[in-house]
Image 1 (cartoon, one colour):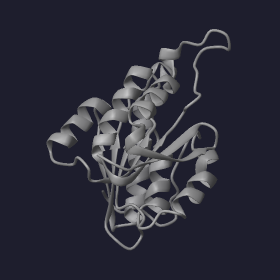
Image 2: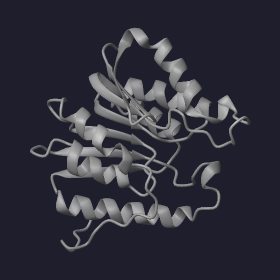
Image 3: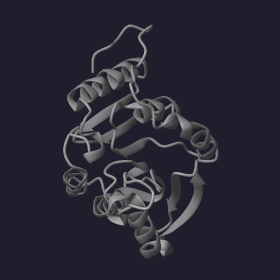
Image 4: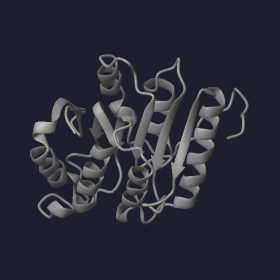
Length: 213
């Protein structure tokens, strides 16, 4: 990725991440060593990606963030200009990597299922220090993301799941299959002997450490 002027700033039009920053800072202040290899499922404009590049990756060693997104958006993004979102993501991460040349961003523009199956086939299973699951909000998709990302996370690594209580429908019209909660609950119950909860972060997020393969 090409270098950029030092006075340029990332550009974001939406913000669903900044509210979580205090909880992230608190969590990662307790984690040593800091991650060197991160998997992000759902990157959108790159706000969380940029934060991870600057504040989560170990600053004194080469690091990488693998970003998985189709940039087609989910049903809740049907009115958004997703190609513009994708272009903004690329500009933002190019800017940050220009400032932090020890780090790199690997972009996987495909479904999370396809991307993670490929990563497993290419030998990345058990190599990621941190995984951020913030992709599809459909329960079946979320369950796939959690199971496959568990395979990719190393023993001792950390996973954060976003949007635990997210709902697209009005109160009283909720569809449990149209929300991450059922998938997160199902996964954490099935895998409870292989993980340890770290924190319910900012209400909407849940963090765990992988304790066994």
